[in-house]
Image 1: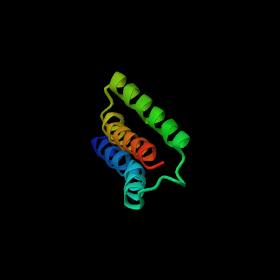
Image 2: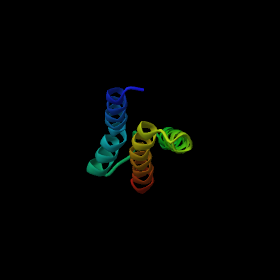
Image 3: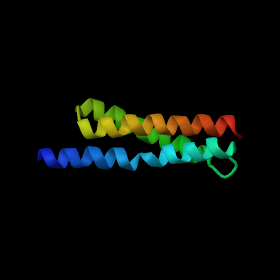
Image 4: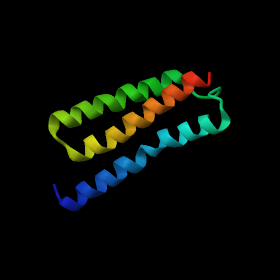
Length: 85
């Protein structure tokens, strides 16, 4: 694979995972998770954690980096939902 495309995928992988952090920020700011689905974010956490494990098995740098960031973000959202129910 071309090095430039690997760099591009790392960037896109990281950028795409900021949806978790933006949701976390909104929950913290509003001190409410009223309109946020715990089930949905639990599914998201399981999904990105599974992709992280897969990336580790393949030694695939873009998968590993983006899914570390996603797993942390998804975990933060799940915790925030539980705290601000």
